Length: 163
Ligand SMILES: [Zn+2]
Image 1 (cartoon, rainbow, N blue to C red):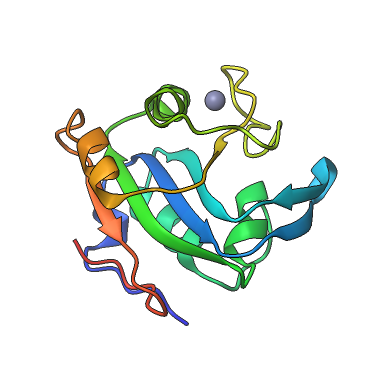
Image 2 (cartoon, helix red, strand yellow):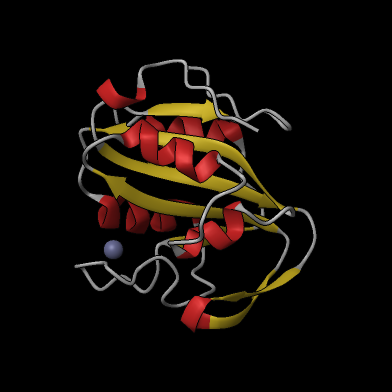
């Protein structure tokens, strides 16, 4: 499957992003040095940053086949995890603040210490949050505070990003 971008990925600015994945049934998964992790059904919000080409990075996350490099890759290649939303924050370099304020706003929890935060300079416990449910209205409301942010809905079976 190929991800089709509706904008020129190379010319899109850098920034931060959040990828929201849905899991319908429990999964136990060995993730690098973190060992065997249990993932209950629900939603997982991963916050990352790519200061050169935001869309190229997001396109990589949406690709189901790739060489595993980051912790999040274990989820994005797993058939039970499905990316449902991508949030883009062009021009932002505050990934840790985004992660922490999203947690405060939504009551999301960090289930797996160390997940996605190996190279975090602000000593975050992880860069992956867990929430039982995520509503699109909730995301829209959250994004109102970021005028240049974009919410992309990823349709099932279609990794094309349209916005
Ligand atoms: Zn951090």
